[in-house]
Length: 208
Image (cartoon, rainbow, N blue to C red; front, side):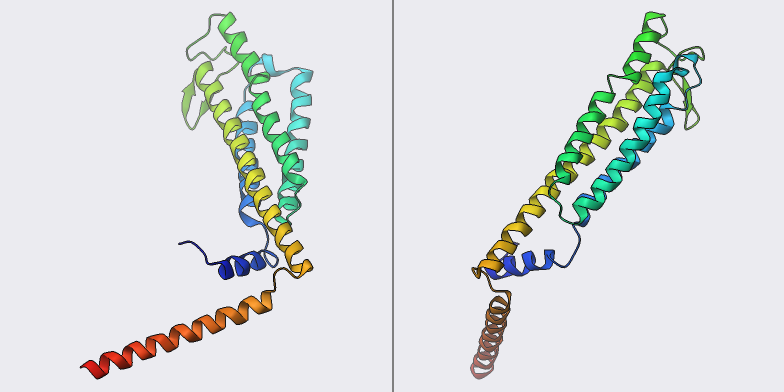
């Protein structure tokens, strides 16, 4: 149902007294998907992953999780600058697909390993099921893409709400919009509506 102009003003005014909850929740959901990726990737036992690159990757992953959490808190407080941080983090998640996961898949493919093989770089039991290199890569890609999608959605919705609140505050400060006046007008509208209902009810009784 479309809001009336007065209802839109009241809705914008409510934003000043509540947190930007949905975008913040989406950012936290992005952290959840990132953790699923983290747990799967660093659960592989192959010697392929026993390199300094993995150590750096672990540190960067933990750092990105921290930054994402801080960004979720920032966007919760209607700080528009954190939308850029969220978009950068989303781009990093997409780029990571072509890092260690893709390199490991290429390593297995080059060694002729395409099916389930305990000697593969990308081999693990996931929820009790043995996964082939391609299946492992698919899961890793899904978690990273899901995380990126949540971060992008958080940034977009967060930006929209931030701009909306920012514009509303400017109108209030300039005197273009008065919340008190709007509330008074809505009360008068309610009184007129009640009076009309009473008149309609009385007219119906007279007819009967």
